Length: 122
Image (cartoon, rainbow, N blue to C red; front, top):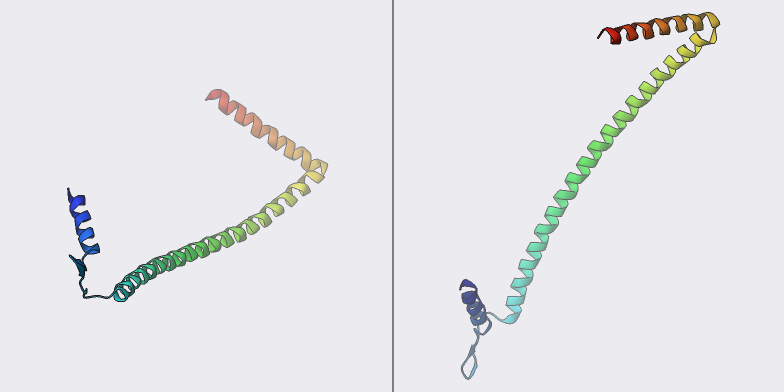
């Protein structure tokens, strides 16, 4: 029922300046009404532009934060790569000599034996 009243109200607003037998002078000219509608539309667009501007600013801050985090991670990965390459060089040096290879095999077999006994008793 409310929509019917709105329809009548909008229809009354549409035919507000028309009376029986002629057109009555309205208080606003059509140019003023158009200007008012344009001003409201411009204000609405300005609000939307401001929202989009804040949103893009937030996205920019988030992207810069992620870039800083990725740079730190890259630096930490480079440092760990250096440590691992040093460790691998030491392993290569140990396994190059035969006596070191025998000691490493002996240690590995003791560790494997210990793990086997541990799992069997568990």
